[in-house]
Amino acid sequence: MRYEGNIFRPFSEANSYLLQCTVGCSHNQCTFCGMYKDKRYRERSLAEIMEDIALAKDHYGDLEKVFLCDGDAIALETDMLLAILKKLYQTFPSLRHVGSYVGPQSTLSKSMEELRTLRLAGLTKAYIGVETGDEELLKKVKKGVGYDQMLEAGQNLIAAGINLSAMVLLGLAGKGEASRRHALATAKICNEMKPQYLAALTVTPVPGTVLYRQAQTGEFELLDPFETLVEMKQIMENITADPIKFVGTHASNYLPVTGTLQKDKQKMIAAIDAVLKTGDESRLRPDYMRGL
Ligand code: SF4
View 1 (cartoon, rainbow, N blue to C red):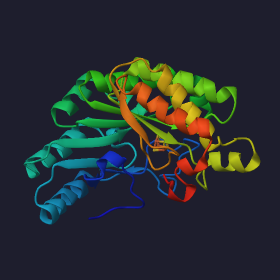
View 2: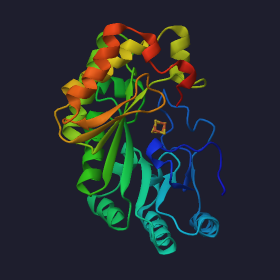
View 3: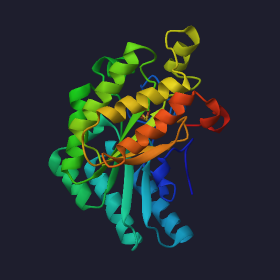
């Protein structure tokens, strides 16, 4: 298979064929993100993408799941996305899932009719990096949109019938009151957006990023593992939307927690409390096992 540069995909797309439609991220400015810093954003040609689909057919035969890479495939023109989806479903008779990371700005550049057409054509799941509901923090980390736009992007995807996974970043605000503000605002945007999935990841300063430099100079203070758990708990406690599948098992997290809100809320909070009460670091995922 042909790929340009490092390729990223969500954990839940581990069994998906990765089809690179764009190279890099159309935004590529978030201060904490190093995923596509080595790439200059560009769209691959439809001819190249069609060739890749043919190569995948030769190699795999049939497929059930496909994930569109890189960071923001929804940035492609709708007609091009529809052509890709059509070809995928024609080529792979067992295909039942096509997922993609989606940027909020690119999502908002599509009309509701376009989003519904994409869903009808088989775009089944979108992963949006919400990161936080804190307006000030969204600006500080250069997410490119504020609270209202982020919310609208998520709500539009859901209204179009696309399954939505919202990703949030524990520790993004740093320590103290900022951490609490981040947790409460993040719970608020999740309550309003009502994604089907909420994935919590823990911020890890990556060399080459602005956040890494800020951590080096002391401008940004990383939470300790237990403070990260407190933040996770605060987000959970303040989410009232029901149901949301909470996915806290990402490799960056100190304590893997998963379950359905609201059904499993108390159980998940009790699991966090059990570790917080003991302060026992041996119950945390060690740093060498953590990753992005
Ligand atoms: S976090 Fe997402 S939107 Fe921001 S630069 Fe990284 S891939 Fe692009």
